[in-house]
Image (cartoon, rainbow, N blue to C red; front, side, top):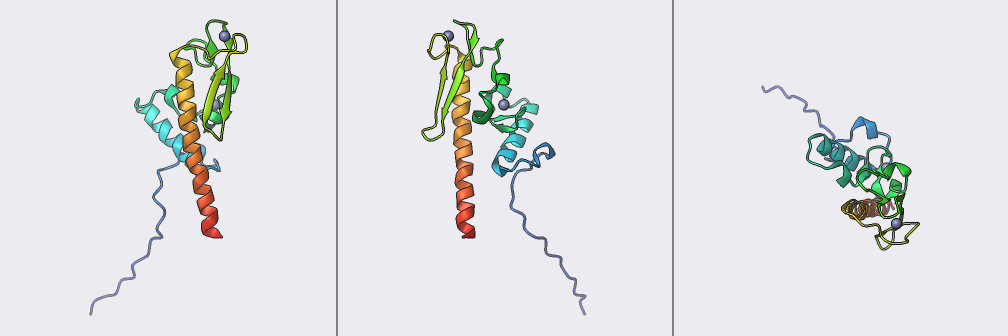
Length: 144
Ligand SMILES: [Zn+2]
Ligand SMILES: [Zn+2]
């Protein structure tokens, strides 16, 4: 007689990338995963900290906190107009995905690679967050 062994069924957990405990309380799951993934890539030296779509300091999508004074980096020229030597404003259009930097003094788009990088990363962060909004809608529909 063969002994019947009861195999314990392991409940299938959706295979999502690990979320670092630092972000365990972040409500937006996709954001928590993106933060953890970018942190890890940055630590491995594979991701330029200024190429991130999420913010380690504010624990948010970049476009949600880029208007904070902490995102002005004078040395590199991020959110900084070198012509006028002042911080520049960021306008984010959530609907069209438009990102505009405007200098309050010369009213132009501040020149420089760093400012173009901000525009590029904010667009990427908008797109990533937009996808996660779609997921939320899909989840709601599935429940209904
Ligand atoms: Zn931030
Ligand atoms: Zn200016």
